[in-house]
Length: 509
Ligand SMILES: [Zn+2]
Image (cartoon, rainbow, N blue to C red; front, top):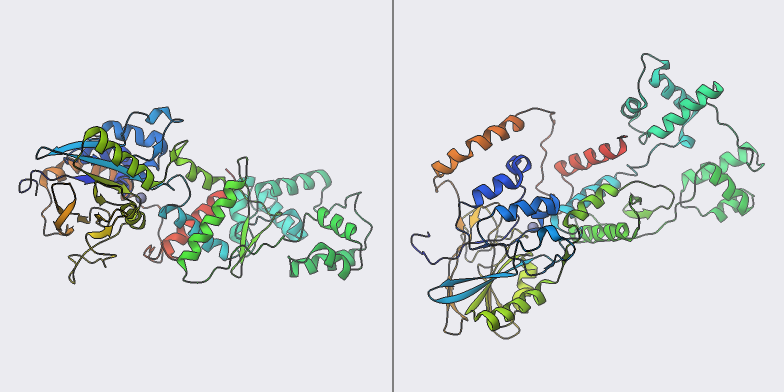
C-alpha cells in the first residue's frame, strides 16, 4: 500500500501490550521488535501499556524508533517517564505540515477500563453466589468440626502443616466457607493447653442462660439484618446485654445498605456497580484496604463486621503510578491551537486511545484545524455499507462524520482490534485544511493476504520460547472456557479466573 501511496500516514492507536503468550513472556522486547519493522509516524499509549506499571512502559517507549504522543498526561511526579514522549509530533506531506496529537482515555488511572471492570464483574458474579469470601470463624465451628480439624493436623492419619489443612478442609466441606490459618492455630493451641476444644466461657460474659443466648443467636442467623434493639425486645433482654453477647460471639447484625439493585442482563448497571465498588475502595484510607461487599438476592450488603482483604484489586489500580490524566477534549484542543499558532500546521490528526464515544465527543468539541480522529480502545468496528468484509457487525459508519461546534466536519475512524483489520482512509482537504471529501474502508486481514516469510522466520526463536511454556499442560477443564460474554455478563472463563483469585486470597501465603 505504501508503494501505491507513499505519502500515507501510518498511525498506531495503542494497546500494543497484552494479547497472547508472546506478550506475557516476551513483554515489551518482542512488542517493540516487531512494531519497529513498520514505518509508523506516531503511536499513542494505550491503557494496557501500563499493565506492567510505568517500569514496563518506559523501556518500550525508549526502544521504539518513532515518536510516542500523548497530550493529556501530567508526569510531574514520575521522573522515569519524563521526556520520553511528546504531546504531539509534526510531520510534513507535500510541503504541508500536519500535527499528530495523541490522547489517552482520561479515566486510565481508575478502575474503569474494560478489562478492569470485567475483573470486578467477575468478582461480582462470585459474590452473587453468596458470601464466598467469608472465612470460617471460631464461633461457627462446632466441637466435632474442631476435632476433625485436629485430626487433619496430625492427630489422625498423618501430620500436616496448618497450611495444608486449609485446602483439605475446603475439600472435605465444600458447603462451608473456607477456613483460615489463624483459626486452625487457635484450635491447636487450645488443645495443647487444655486437652479439649470445648468453648471456654469468658469471665466477663453476661449472666444469661444458655437457651436464651442460643435463641438469640439462632434468630440472628435466620435474619442477619435484624437490628440489635429488636433482638433485645424479642429475647426479653436489655439492649446492652444483647450487644455484649454479640460482641463475645463476634457477631453483629449486618448494617444493611441497599447500594444498588442488580438486574440480570443489564451490563450498564453492572458497570455502574463496578464504579461504586471501586469508589468504596478508594475511600478507604490505608492499605491493606479492607471492605466486604456481600451480595445476596440481588442486593448489596455492606457489612462492617466481615472484613476481607481486597488490596490485590488496588495493585491493579496503581499501575499508572503517580501519573495524572487530564480530560481528552480540552487537552487536544489546547495542543491543536498551539500547533496552529506556533508550528503553522495545515491540519491536525488526533491519534486517540479513548474509545468511540469519547472520540465522537472530541470531534464535537474540536477546535479549528482538527480533521481526523484515528481511534482505539473500544475495539469498534466501523463500516459503511451492507457487506462488511469480515465477521464483525459495524458499530457505526466508516468514517463517522461528526459536525464540530464550529460547524466543521471531523472524521472519526476505528478498525476493531488485534490487527484483524487495517484501517484505511484517504481524506481530501481543501486549501484551509478542512475536510472536502474522503474515501476508504477498513481492510480485513484474512488469509487472502499471504504471511510475510521473513517475519515468520524472525518469530522462530520467540515461538520456541512461547511453545515451551504454551504446550505445557498444567490442568484441564471439562467445559469450554468461553469469554464471549465477558463484557456483559457471566462467562465460564470469567468464573474460572474469579475462582482462582478467590482461591489465591483465601489461601495463606
Ligand atoms: Zn484500551
